[in-house]
Length: 150
Length: 236
Image 1 (cartoon, rainbow over the protein chains, first blue to last red):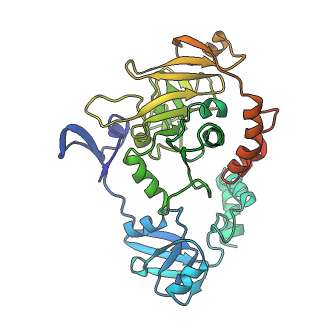
Image 2 (cartoon, each protein chain N blue to C red):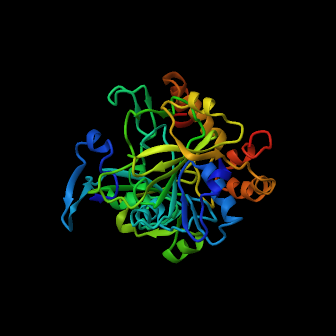
Image 3 (spheres, rainbow over the protein chains, first blue to last red):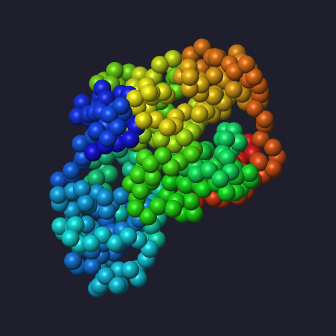
């Protein structure tokens, strides 16, 4: 797919899969093409969902784009509601139709320690703890044992 | 820095501030609350200044259409030709420093009409003769579509103007109290000066008062930690 700009940067040297071509619609111009990213699986988290996988998503995030690019989409959600009308009443957001979603998991608090806008804020203290724990393997293992495997 | 940035914002323009940019956000809001009330202000994910409804994709698509008049970028390294490095320092295969990556900076340096580069650290390691890796070149040959590019570089010590014809940075104004000798010691390339180069106007009492009240409150909605500390009289 074409991307604006980029021509003449070191991306040409560092990313051989990026191609620079003559623009077929304006041959005097050079244009960069990049291969699309096609994730095998994406994991996204919804504010709410219906059982058919229709999701209410934060419009500030790129979750809908990620879902439409991926072969398999596993969505978690703060809660499951009965109908699309109820979904709209939950709050502000964009609706992603369930046809894009492979599997749905109800997981309240599933975005912690990051945020779900309108539901809970980011946990800054926990994020600081994570950053400190990620500094070396031993402290990171202790973090995983406590919060993930524990 | 915020006041220097505010003075570059023109009323009626569409001005956007991206990620990790509290200083430009402060400067743009200062301008918006004073001389640029009719500017369209876009601040990434700010509840009051983010019009888009389809993630950052909608923002990038809008930018690719060349719809922004003014945007802001930074660089781990910045060189005299206006090249920005957001990728790696040293040999790319075995880097001594790895920055977060360009994240669209190789498009956002080309399409907005004017780009102001900001850097809170003005030292010989950040302002270098030649960047190790070019994420965003300062200039492009004529067969590259590039309606915009670098306009100014704002640091705590000075403001550079980018001379497009010669693809180089020239010092336009020193911040009050900064000498040419000190600026040269803190810069990793030989400085060129605009013949009219002088001293930047110090922030006025009104500008400082507005920064510490309305601007601080608006910035706190997106950068709460920054707003807690950065507007103290002792630091700003």
